[in-house]
Image (tube, rainbow, N blue to C red; front, side):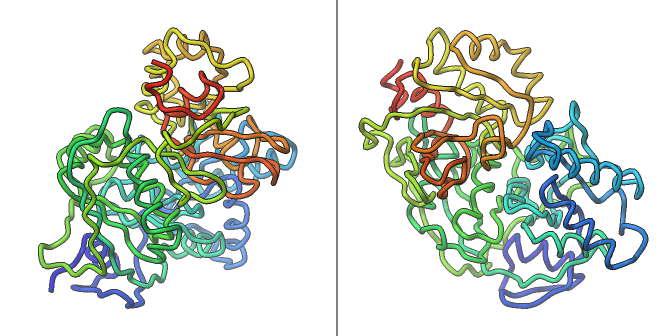
Length: 420
């Protein structure tokens, strides 16, 4: 019996010829990462170990992105702690304001994560990097502190669920709709501690940006990781960025899967996840008379250049509704610059939007767009739990950038066709 791509990566990192689901392994980590919320706790755990040096200063990335630019004194102290730790231990990949971005968009963009890697991050959306053909998963800060010290982690090899995507996308359907549809189908615990492997002919028409979105939200179905085997699109993306030699792996034809789902993407419409779970998915055309106070386009899920172009396509020559705040946050400094060069900012500003420097900000109810009691937002983020973006009595609806932009214009959740 062959192995899946996830099993092959874990076997490689555990220096074993073969691994099987359920097996406990000790694996060597290629990249360890943390942000301004999780790094301070990881640093404290690291110091308790008392090793005196990190396992490899070129294999650790520290990215202050959640509450930066510093929203208050506590946030400033957290970032100061990270900055001083990075200097003390010679950590190569520390990204300060002006160079930083949202971690899960920044590291692939910078070529720090490459195909074949085992990536361990103190953030649940670390699974994003699976789009490159890496095994990437989130852990607690204590585990991350230990990884920074010894460069290894124990893992239980997950079984794999395969999602075979076929057919062509309808207009205004994106990778976000595909993953929301899947989460709606299997539920928020439908892939608990499983590797979610995405394959099939539809991948040929999915950009890397869309693939990152799909893998990013594997955790919203309980997945240990989301992963896509590298193809020519992946290789083209990696070729101009990779800081290390990639290892291109794929699943064997006789690999064993716990379950296989065949999904005809042609049947998927633009969708919206209703409060308060990402599984509460409905076609956007069924979202009737849901007025919004805020629209947010950004985050590690949908703050890349493709997402901004989609929003601009809808907003060009139009004005947002007078009762709506539209917040747009490019995910990295390079994406910010690219959007500026392409004239997207002009479109956003003329429509009445505000644009922020890269930050997670409103996604986690941190800053730059916190919701008040009773307010309702549509967002291109990944979670809509109770109180996720602010007050416990606010509501968050998840969508793709086309739908979020169209809803900002209409003042209520609408299909993009309704404003064009």
